[in-house]
Every structure is written in C-alpha cells, then in structure tokens.
Image (cartoon, rainbow, N blue to C red; front, side, top):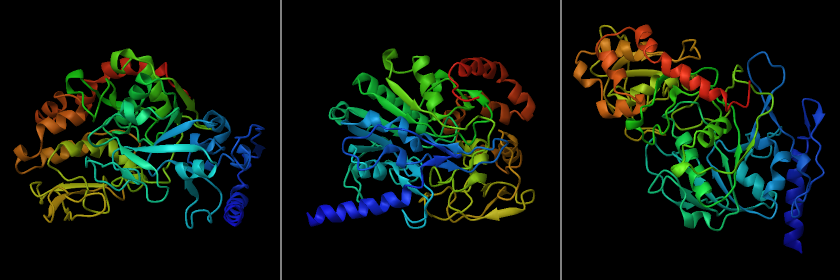
Length: 432
C-alpha cells in the first residue's frame, strides 16, 4: 500500500503540473472518454502550441499533443513506437523535465498506463546521438527498461517476430523534408511491415520546416536506395502524414500492399507557415539556420567537401583543403565531435565559405556547390561520383555541374518532372 500511495502521490504531482494544458487558443478540448487504466482524463493533456513565424495568429499544435484523438485507439492494445529524441509531447511547465518544456512520448504513454511493449529507433538512434550512416544496435532503454530495436542496422524494416506481439504501432518522428534524410525511408519500411502483418499504424504528424516549396531533380528508379526510395524531388514539400498517404496511394509498398494508417493531423498548420524546430532532428542539424540550408548543402555529402561536420556549424559552412584559398578567405579545421567521429578532412585546414550568419532563404540553390567546383584547384577531387549520384538521384546533375552549366539552366532541366510530381502531390495534401 505504501508503494502504491507513493506512486499515486508522484503521479498526482505530475498531473498538477501538466493540468494547465486544458486550453488551446482559449478553447477547451472536450473529451469524456477515459482509458480504463488511466488515472486522469485525456483532456487534462492540453494540446500545447508551438510558436511560429508567419501570418497565422494561432499556434501550431503537433499530432502528439492531440491526445484526445488517439489515446482511445490505444486502450487495451499492445503498442510499439517508432521514435527518436523528437518524439515529444509539449507542455507549459519548466518543471516536468527540469529545464525542458516537453516530455517524451514514450514516457508520457507509460505514465498513462498505455501498454508500450517496445521501441523502434531510426538513423541516429532512439536518443539521437549516433553519427550519420552509423549502424545503430538493438538495446534497452535505461530509463524505461523497454527493448529498443534498430531500424538502421541489420534490419531497416521491422521483422515479423518483432511485430507479432503488437496490436498497433505509432510513428512519431520529425522530418525536414529532404529526400535523402532517411526518416521517410524508415516510414516506408514501417508501413510495409505493418501492412504485411496486418498491424494498424498511427502517424502523429509534425510540420515540415522546409515544407513551403518543392524543388530539385526527381529520383530515377535505377538510383533507388535508403537515401531515396521513391520518384520524388530532392525537396518533397510534404509532412510525414501526407507522405504516408502518398506511399499508400501510389502503391509504393512491396507488391502494392496497403497499410492501415490513422493520421493524427496538425492543427493551425499550412505549408506557407514558417516553423522552427524546438529540438534538433539529428546530431548535425543543430539549429534553424542549418535546417534551412540543409537541402542545398546536403549535396556536399556526396562529395569530398566537408559541410561543417566536425565543427559546431554543421551545414552552415563548407570547405576542403583543395579549394582555392586565394578565392575562399574563410578557413576552419574539422575535428571529431558530437555526431561526427570521423569528419571529412579531420585535422586539416579547409578553405571555403561561412554561411552561419547569412539570411538564409527558404529555397534550394546550387550556387554553393557550383562555386566550390569552379574554384577547386583539383577538380578531380570534388565528386565522390557514386555517392553523389545516390544523393542527387540522377547522374545528370554532376555532369551538368562539371560541364559548367549555369544554375538556371540546370534547374530548367528538371521542371517538367517537378510539374508531374506536383500534380501527384496535390492529391495527398492535408494542409493548404
């Protein structure tokens, strides 16, 4: 009894802290449904809004915070969660998690006595600390004791055995809207596995910080890889929920299987709004500047030019020892750090450009990679051809850059494909 009383006291204290989450934009979220095991109502978890830039006076509410729409679907179910460090429920208090204003989705659902059985982790791991491309191992979460199964190691797709004791799966990961950012590939494989095993999937939608535009070459089928699985442009302009609808609608899953998905939609969101991520989505996207520049500077990942890894300004600078120091006045030296144990040109002076303080435009540009190639002292060192092709999704882009074509001419070459894609995309948009 004493242990139970202590547990109830702690739970009640936490509830008091978060019970202020009852109103959103002045309107109470009303719901009378209770979970059989939950010790408080769902509407005690107010949909917390996140501040944004733009003309909309109402703040965005992310899918995870709209608990009134999905908690009842978990009642009596054995639940698996695909999650990382961005999978959180926001709150108004600074006291729940010391200096942070959110709790992890897994912790929140366990608090509600939801029967969470296991966690599946994408690239960078459950806590988001692994290097890009680094294999993530299975393990156990030290905080909750839950088993963690990697989807970026031996298996990129949940196995039949891993799903056999689950009644439902939740997918909640923050994407940044770029094709070679692998979370949408993880989404594909999770949907495929759930469809094959007849396990429903709940997708808690989140804004796309680069969702205001569509651009870049379309992926060619022969260059399909985990860095790009579908015939979409480099910047796809969709949320995770919208993209899941497209995967189903275009029958991209193996043998055309369809995944039973429920999308918990965003509130007060549209694609014209500017959304700044409150949590870094991966180790090398530390701030808003890096996320805006990532679609353009991400192409350097397919070259021998460093894109800021091994510094505190990832995807906000670029450079290499073989770039012309007489043209590029800026220089830096990459060293191993958080998120980059082996950066390109480790401990070498790299000459290049610093973009950390420019006013970055929310658009895609080739000017940086064109400028770097043009002013490389040894142009044969610039491209890692096979890797660049995988990132670009086509062989043509490298050929066009090497031929010295101007940016506007290169962009003109993929406009027809973009128009076709935009017509397809329009069918699956949830938000204006």
